[in-house]
Image: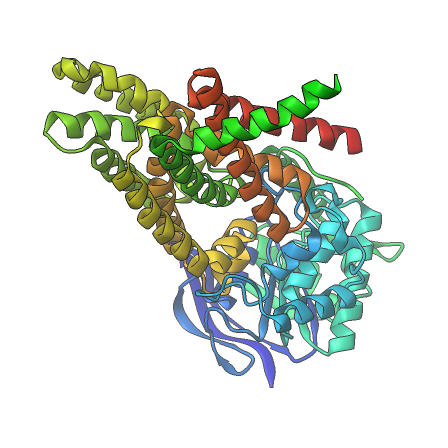
Length: 277
Length: 281
């Protein structure tokens, strides 16, 4: 069975085409790194897989079935937000709030919801961390709690939207290693969107690169090449490999790094502050 | 010294017994108790959602409703609740787009107060009651008002209990809640309707200008002192009831306005919670 399959899919927001006639398949149990410049449609694709963004043309199937909003087999980790207010709510209560939290007519979570939350916290090694107030956790710790929320209900597919944003390199690797371990332990598929390829090298099974309304899915050697990226960026791109790292250059300017920094500043402007573990 | 203590104890007990023998005191304590619980619990979620300013604005809109109602011969409470409901639903409909718009909300708030003043101007005989609308007068509450507050309050709490989990989910993790099928708009709309009723109730006790003291004070203090959701809600109710009942008793004793005492105790509890949090950190 395929985890995700797109067949001739076009996604558009407000009349603007984000993806045009895109076709690819992600197999069960694969770790896919999703890359691409800002506005290439990484978040839009995730929202389409969740049933939150309309499909203009083509068919999307998730775990062998048509897209269905609220599909319990799909885990989702949204981009990190700073908590509002100064409620010293514990990480545990924060995670539990998402365990069947969509159900109306119940005052408190059921016993099974608490058990599910404990299982998810244990998976990400956050059992003790969860006792602490959420507002006192660092960015890396909060990502672990968000991952625990995404693992509630035993999903078969994880959609992670920019889990590395605003983390320093050491914490980035901790998050990647954690996701990889959990993914292999549970044997589930992961779609991991990121701004930079290098931290994910050696972990990802295949790369999904979005750009210019198109998508390329394949091994790093197949996708991260001058010709493929030039097509996706709509500009001449040079790929330089050095010391096991890959640099994507346009006119001597390193693209991914520039974009990462740009987005970093952007996030700062929005949230006011970020914690570093 | 020892005789003083022995003499003092029965005096306090007798004082309380005498106070509780007055019907208007019992009504005030009942009304205050109902509103403290309802406004406290609704306010708990309002504070968590970062929408306290919207709650503040609703009460000012309610002032225009109350004075307008009197002009057309309707009881002020119903005018107040009608307008807070309309404004609450409007805020709920606009949802996320309005929650950060402090300027827009502030303008609506001033406009409503201005309108309320104009309505007062047309109905000069009503001026005496303006103070009680703005600052509340819990001792003027009668039996039938207590009953109305009780029924509306019960409605608020039942509705809140039914929506508790999606409301919490949408508050803490809106993106994930939406992906799991929660309609953020439905949650926002329903919650603002509940807030509107709670605001109208709180205005009966402390007036439209001091709604913060019952809706925000206890919840904000409780959220700084606890890490558990359930403990936070319980502490909010305890703080709200204590502040309200002690405020009423002090007002009875001193003949100072009850709203002053409730506002003072609410502020005291909040700033004490700030101090404690700083001390422990």
